[in-house]
Amino acid sequence: MRELIIGGARSGKSLLAERRAGDSGLRVVYVATAQPLDAEMSRRIAQHQERRRADWGLVEEPLELAAALRRHAAPDVCLLVDCLTLWLSNLLFAGDTASGAAAGETASCQRLAGAIQALSDLLPQLPGQVILVSNEVGSGIVPMAALARLFADEQGRLNQRMAAVCDKVTLVVAGLPLSLK
Image 1 (cartoon, rainbow, N blue to C red):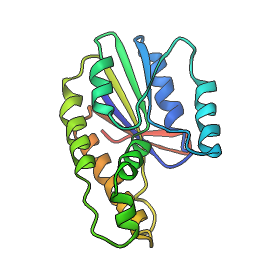
Image 2: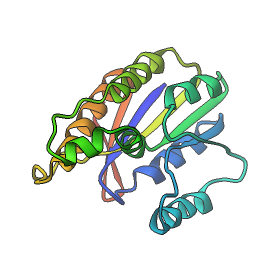
Image 3: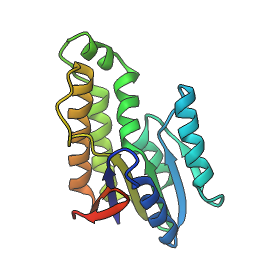
Image 4: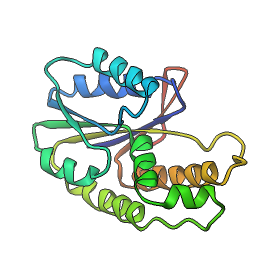
């Protein structure tokens, strides 16, 4: 079973994902994509760590998500990926795509395209359960800055690709889950 849980910032999507993983009856491996690059992100990571159950496994993987999922997937495992949004950001900033977009250049990120394709191809083949958490960023206005537009466009495309290969898609708004698929 593959599930994509999407929602806005502080919508309750991670809490729902953690609850579903805990209720799965499987051994849970939390796959974290965040990097503690500043004090605020360090605090956010600490909040997630404090909330997590002590018996869950942890894999920290900011870039090579498909490879990490392949290594840790098993019939008796629930992989909880939190979150695709930070993974996307990590990939955009890993090369010169972000700086090029900010400078007004046409952005093309082959690494990002390859990573999304690899994840999309891999998900249906994995044993066990996979829960993906991602932000829904396309409900507002089109951002003014080129880099923000690139991010919003790529996040929307990523969410569509993951929704297409997941068995279940849930939108979370104000802590309330709405089943989309």
